[in-house]
Structures are given as C-alpha cells and as structure tokens.
Image (cartoon, rainbow, N blue to C red):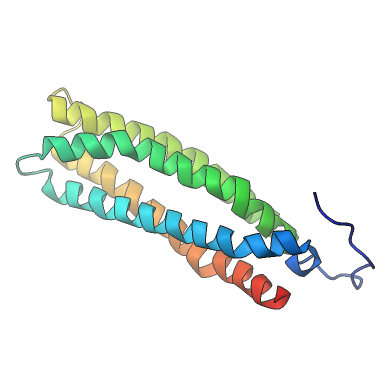
Length: 172
C-alpha cells in the first residue's frame, strides 16, 4: 500500500515517482528490465515471423511453423499483461497527461492479440494443407503483424521507457 504523501505538489505539477514510497521506486528498475526482456522476446518473435514470411514460397518447415503458431498468442498475451499490470500504472502515475496514449496502447493490445490468434490459426492451417490463404496472402498477413508489432515496440522504447528512466533517475 502507498505511504501517505506529505505536502502538496506545486500547483500544476504532475505527480511523479519521487512521490511514491521507497519500495515502489526500488521496483521501477525491475519493471523497466522486465519490459525490456519482453521487448527482446517479441523482437525475436518478429524476426522468426519474418523468416517464415520469407520462406513461404519454398518448402515449409512444418515443425517451425507449428512451434511459432503455438507460441505466438501466449507470447503476445504475456507481454501485454506484464505491461498492463506493471508498466501502465507507473506511466499513468508519472504522466497523467498521457491517458489517451495509454488507452490507445491498450486497444492495440486487444487488436494484436486477436491478430495473433488469427495468424496462429492460419499458420496451422497452412502446415496442414487446408489453408484458406495462399503463401503470398499468408506472407502479407505475417508482415502486417510483425511490422505493426515492431512499430508498437519502437514507440515504447523511444517514448515510454525514457519517461520511466527519467523518473527513476530523479528519484535516486
């Protein structure tokens, strides 16, 4: 539970992590590192999806495709739950003027999870030979997914993480 905040911030000043209890400040570094770890996993997933998209015209590596199809929805959902439970509350606390951005990122999470489910199904169907999409269409679908995910990660890396790091430095 948060410790009571003593004193009032200057009029117009936004709350900051420096106004959080010491325990919350100490966990910020862990949250940032956890987010970066999630990013590394998702970037690796994007790299693998790109390889699949590049290979679709040739002989499919069925085992690889099935492994990716099984891992994709869970990897996306796990990363999103981490952000929604740990990162978003901190960002909301230090940057309350970014509520619309957080809402947009949350909607992107819903869309990405739905897309990941559809993509996993399309990959499984392709491997089983009952795909409703030809290799070109599936490749287009794959590229749309991983390019959108990479943009999402880049935004968080370039904007959200620096805000959290700045607050961490200010609290030190």
